[in-house]
Image (cartoon, rainbow, N blue to C red; front, side):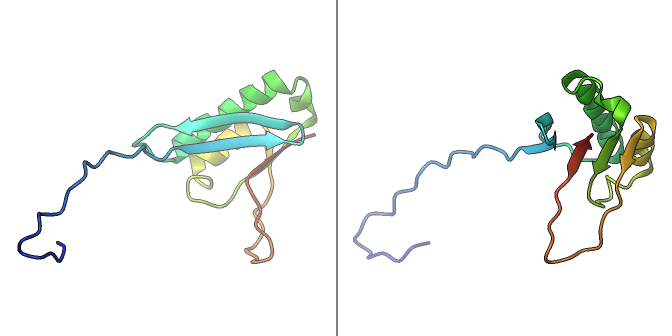
Length: 119
C-alpha cells in the first residue's frame, strides 16, 4: 500500500524476477593450494552420509593431486558441527586413515577454519 492522491494514477508494479539460489561450496586445501571443491545440490542438506562420501572424495583428490603424500599421513581438521561428528563421518575418516585433529575450545580471539594438512 502507498499513500496517493485520489486523482493520481495507481503506483506502477514491477515484475519480480526470481533471484539465483544460494550455492554451498565445501573447499578442501593444503599449503600447496586447493585440493577439492564440492558444491552441494540445491535442496539437499549436509548429513553424516554426505560428509562420509565427501571424505572419500577428498582422499581420491589427495591421491591424484598430491602424489605420494597419503603415505606421509594427512592431518584433518574440521569444526564440531553435528554432521562432522556423526558416526558415519568419523568412521569414514578412520577408514581413509586421516588423523583427525581435536577441535579447540571456542575462543573469540581465534576463528579456525576447516583445514586439510598434507605433510
